[in-house]
Length: 317
Picture 1 (cartoon, rainbow, N blue to C red):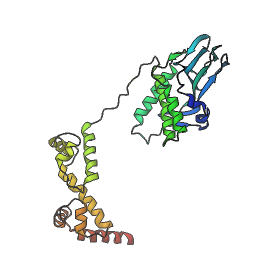
Picture 2 (tube, rainbow, N blue to C red):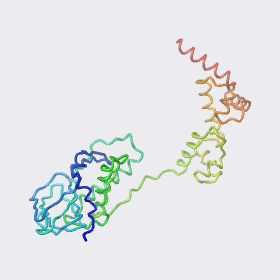
Picture 3 (cartoon, one colour):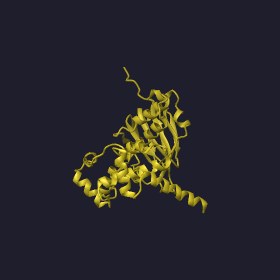
Picture 4 (spheres, rainbow, N blue to C red):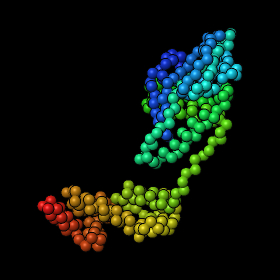
């Protein structure tokens, strides 16, 4: 009894993914999917010599046949993969007695001239990976190879995303296409080179984590030790990091941030000072009065009046 054909679902609407006209950016490259479908070759069917200016990936999930690339004839059978293009003359033919199925990804890969320098975070990794992938694809041997990294299965993942109406179907299809490219690239003779990120100051990184946590939670009781544990480092190390970053101490930074938010609340809101104190991390309005006057030389009420006078004077100029 013949085993079920895993890709038979893709025969129901063979051009479904083709019609989506998928285009996306990866790193410094643009990708335009021209075909992503299952094709069937009846016994003896011949596709005469032709070439494409784009990349055409061929995976054989079932059957057998032959392919001629340039001047060399190669046998094809289940589990093989080969890449034609750009501009590789090739001819395909199914076995005289046995049909052959082929999963085809025909994709245009374009090097983009303009780089979006505004979106720097994360891009350095993505740019490197896309560049290495395209470089490896261009160095693939001009012959069929075993699909040892299971790129073939991602065709079905892409089709199911569309067929089942999955949430985020386009993103899933794009990820599946990228996986096909990456797994095919691993068959290249070019070794994979891990991106070597620029060195960063680990203490600056820890300072950013600590201060972001303070900004997110300043209205709650916070301790140096609590924040240090989240990094995780000792409280003494975190205190030293604050000093190294030009801040007197953790408590000074926390108090300054709370007072900044209090000033905004005083100027923008109508809430009583008792409520403002509790909403911004001060145990009582009396303590807020004490800290506020010590820092600014004014009470909250005097501060609000002073700012109102400044705004009035500026509006009359």
